[in-house]
Length: 298
Image 1 (cartoon, rainbow, N blue to C red):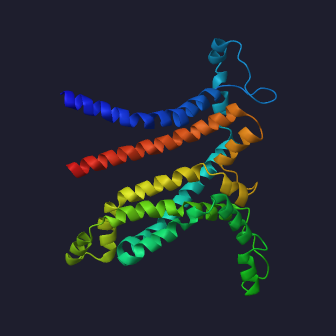
Image 2 (cartoon, one colour):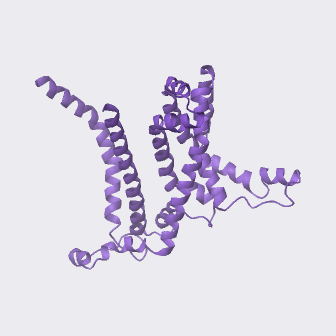
Image 3 (cartoon, rainbow, N blue to C red):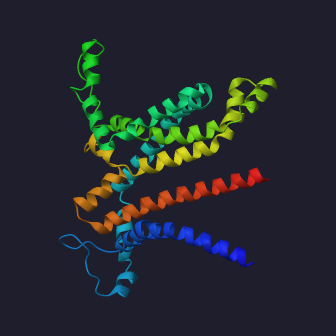
C-alpha cells in the first residue's frame, strides 16, 4: 500500500513541471485573454475602467465584444477561415496519403530515412522566408509567369498572387509535412499480412484499401487532420503576405485588433472564440482516441 502511494507521489512529482509550464504559458494567458474579452476599449486604446461592475454585468455590456463578433462582416471572415482550413486539410490529406504510403510501404527500407529527411527539409528554413519565396515565384514577374509567357502557354502574365489561390497554395505547402509524418507513423505499423490475406480472399485492391488500410491507419489520419486544420484556422502570415488585403482570415483580424486598431477587448474575444473552437476539436479527438482504445481492448 505504501509502495503504491510512493509511486503515485513520484508520478505527480514528475508531472508537476509539465503542469507548471502549461499553467504559466497556456492557462494563465488564456485566463487573462478571457477576462479582457469582457472589457471595453478606452478612447486611446487599452482598457476602459469600469466604475460599477455589478451594473456593468447586469446591463449585459460585458458581452458586447462577443455580440460584435457576430456582425456579418466578421462572420464572413470566420467562414472564409473555416472553409480555407477545411480545403487545406482535405488537399493535404489527398496529397500526403500516397506520399506516406510510398515511403512506409513501397519504398525500400534503405531509402526511407532519405525520403523522410526530404519531407522535413523545409523545417530547416524559416517559414517566413519560405513564404517570401512563394511571393517571388507567384508574382507577375515571377518564375511561373516567366515560364508560361516564355513557352507561349500564356500571352500575358497571370495574376497568381494576392488571391485565395495563392493563400491556399501557401497553406498547403506549409502544412503538408504535418500531415505526412503522422500518416507515415500509422502506415509504418501496418501489418502487410492483413493486406495479403484480403487479396487472397478475393478482395480487389480498391476494396482492400478502403476496408483494411484506411481503418487501420485512421489514428494517423485523424492526428494529421488535427495538426493541419488547427494551425490553418489561425494562420495569418500566409494570408497577409500571399493574400494581401484581399484575403483576410481570423488570424489577420486578431492581429489587426491588437497591433493596429488597439482594441484588446475585441481582439481577445475573437482569439478566445478561436481558441475555444480549437480546444473543442482536441476534446473530440481525445474522445475518439479513448473510444478507439476501448474498442481495441474489447
